[in-house]
Amino acid sequence: MITTQQSATTSITEDPSVAPRMTLRWDPHLRSLLPPFYLKHGLGEKHMEAVYLVCHHLYAQRKYEEAYPLFQMMAFLDCYDKRAWLGVAACAEAMKLFSKAAGCYQIVAILDESDPISLLRSFNCYLECKKEKEAMMMLETALHRAEEQKERYSHLNDQIIKLKENLLSS
Image (tube, rainbow, N blue to C red; front, side):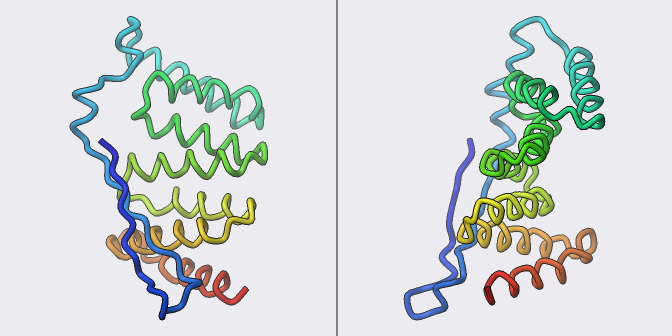
């Protein structure tokens, strides 16, 4: 089960420009309760890997309009496949469908709770949509995740803090 919590980091008396941080939790046991759809239709991991290779090839050739529905099909057949959701998000972003891309990057963030990079991509997409509040929420959550894994994402902390300062000053 996916649960969402918002921890209020501001109150009425505090700075209202600071967005609350969103905490997303993924229950890994859900996969055993609800297996990927492709398994019910006689497809195997080799089939999914072949589809992914085609999708990746189309994306690498900048054929986003062709890769996009194939990545969507992959995500439909296996909603737990992070690569499929990244592909949908990246194609949507390349086609300037920023709102869709932001949502798909958030799905990636739910599937991989340790990854702040998909949240940064979602942040960029929300900025393109002129949705500063949502962008700030993604930035706050990305910073939290990067701080939790300082060794792995130490290079991101300073960048995220600068982005946050720039967004607050504008």
